[in-house]
Image (cartoon, rainbow, N blue to C red; front, side, top):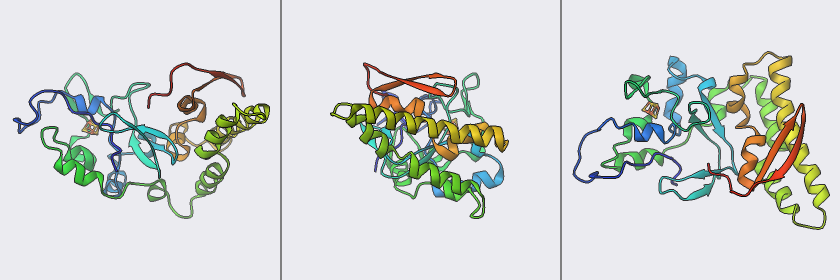
Length: 235
Ligand code: SF4
């Protein structure tokens, strides 16, 4: 399955045998993590606050620039703010800040020869449960969130907007948004959990990813207002 978003620089990939340090691969997004990358968290090279989860049902961009719907969750390194550039990429030095401990996809990526990278992409992906102790109470919140806010529910409600029960569909979407917002707020404000870990526990906020369904959200306090957008979501 193709699911990474590293894109190769155009040019003489066939003739080249070394890295030009152009930074293209790191600026096109952080890597997808695989089971063997769990060791980087144990070593302290990676932390859960530096990664985010893409949940089952989310739309992602493939290496060949096509879009696909995830059939299972994956975990990726975050970008700088809203940008896709990997959070560990140092643009001034044109270097990786965790080079000695970079994830397996980064080690395998040679843009002039993708064979090793493709082999790594086929390996088992890292999952949230690989980074959470089995007795950690957060698992119950994640499970509740998955049951209440799966992407399939959002997709179904969005389709309902064009049917006879569009009012109910709006109600359903707002309910999903409210719950997704509530669970993050509850955990950060009431249980003092680091807000930077929320995108790992629950994926990116639905208020942001709802754009993949052609909708936009305006938040006023704890309430949401839905508005359509012209352009489809660009993951
Ligand atoms: S971890 Fe390092 S090598 Fe990998 S994408 Fe980020 S900056 Fe690049």
